[in-house]
Length: 319
Image (tube, rainbow, N blue to C red):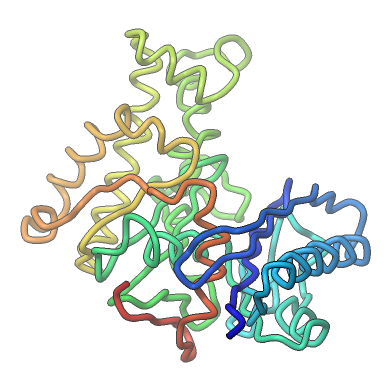
């Protein structure tokens, strides 16, 4: 009998990656291209279709059939698969990518937000496998979030659930590109840590260029760099305490490039959690590093096809 696989897609503002993934989460083939949003929708779709066709041909060469396409994409994605907003992918705004790919390939297709896809990857194949309810926090240029509740990827009525990066931690704080002020993203992301450093040092031009350089300084004992991460950790703990009290989660899974600096964020974050969260919630909370790495998005996207879907959530039994 012919084996089956799924095409998993991870669409970002810089790169689009696709993989041929087995039912057990093994990646057999990779493909990628530069997103180049300035080239417009037609060019982007042509490249995306070509990538999927290459992966389907790769499956056929292995005597495998592709049974569907799962896709995680940057932006707010409605439950129907239409992209409502996407600052990094403006050509996709208002476009029903799920319907387009389904009609073109005559296959089942599911499209979700990229942070949701990563969270589902951790739930199915990574650090979230042992957790019933958890939040994945993606710390990178921004702060993203994906919410799994009782083994269900919770997307909310509009597809915009889990956006912890846009919880307000300072009522009249730094302006955010979302239109609000004082969002967690402005303090705990890579960009936010750089802003912390410049604010503490009193210099807006001189000094390290990014959070990686600041982490290097912090590990070398630089007081300003340590304070920049302490500030980020404090706000992160503040936001997480509210979420944990609201949802009584089993754990938080940290992903993204800045999560490599979790050792610098953790002391202030844990202190805030301990002071603000209910004791019963804090004592049972696991703080974990993501384990799927850069594969989380495509693994989660592929995993969507093996899950049931109902309204605001996607569900699966524990693996």
